[in-house]
Amino acid sequence: MGQVSFTADIWSYPNHRPHLGMTAHWIAKVEGTTSLQLKASLIAFHHLRGNHDGESLASTIVHLLDRAGVTAKVR
Image (cartoon, rainbow, N blue to C red; front, side, top):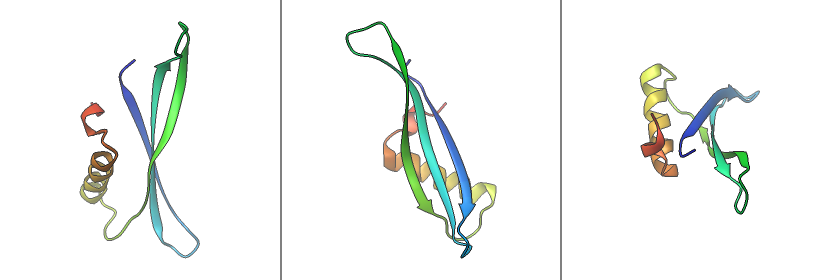
């Protein structure tokens, strides 16, 4: 409870335009019960420009997490 996991995937369309998709996953308590439920949400679907090296991807991911307002939840 209270933590978020993130996944990311990069792929290219047939026209070779690379995109990055990011999702967040967390466990939430179902209101009014003692049950837990797995939740997921799309954070970003982003067209990548320039290099796709580690430094560039890290910078893009931090930017997208900042934009989604969830950077503080990254561990």
